[in-house]
Amino acid sequence: MQNDLKNLLIIDIETVSSFKEYSEMPERLQQLWDKKASFLRNDDNQNSQDLYWGRAAIYAEFGRIIVISVGYFYSKENEPLSLRVKSLSSHNEKDLLEKFVSLLNNFDQDILTLCGHNGKEFDFPYLCRRLSIHQIPLPTVLDTSSKKPWEVNHIDTMEMWKFGDRKSFTSLDLLTAIFEIPSSKSDIDGSMVNQVYYNEDGLDRISWYCANDVIATAQLYLRMKCLPLVQEDKILIV
Image 1 (cartoon, rainbow, N blue to C red):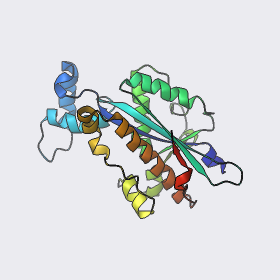
Image 2 (cartoon, rainbow, N blue to C red):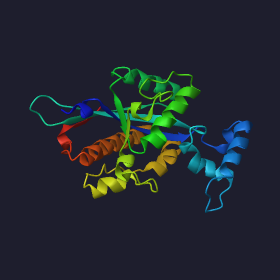
Image 3 (cartoon, rainbow, N blue to C red):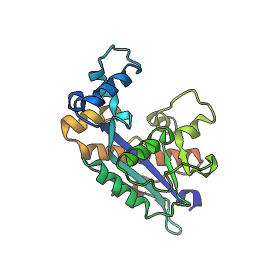
């Protein structure tokens, strides 16, 4: 197995608003959300309370992480490449983040590389911000302070696809379609996570969705490296 696969950890997170309802936020946070909401694109002319339900989860100041899924490649001699995926989930964000850090500590972080789809813009900084809020020291592989750009071991499959073009966002769903990567067949998408979590008690369902996004990202990375996909029977979700 190539060293860049051996030392690669695929990551995806799922987030929700910190509170189910705008009215549950402390008054100080309500005022700060109102200010934030006034600058957001709002084609439907929603008030700040309605915007909170649909948009707060994507901001680390007003959201929280409920699922972190990770995947890594492995292979035995003369056997096809395999992918192992593990999902961590909890209603208690601090507990979830501590378990994630403990998992990262099982790897040599001096050579470990993190990979995600839009990871550099979303997943990695979101993780760092929420770790900081909970006063959990940043793991070496996530801590980019004082590092030169080429010293940061982060890969972003969306950035790989851009080939230097900074103008557009390309979804994981679209890229898996054009690269003919099998669909996860999930019955939810990112826009539904808040609804599924708060109104349907669907943490396990969200965890499965997140794990399948890790699989899709891993397969996309292989495609973009002109490598064979991992066979379906060689993918293990634990």
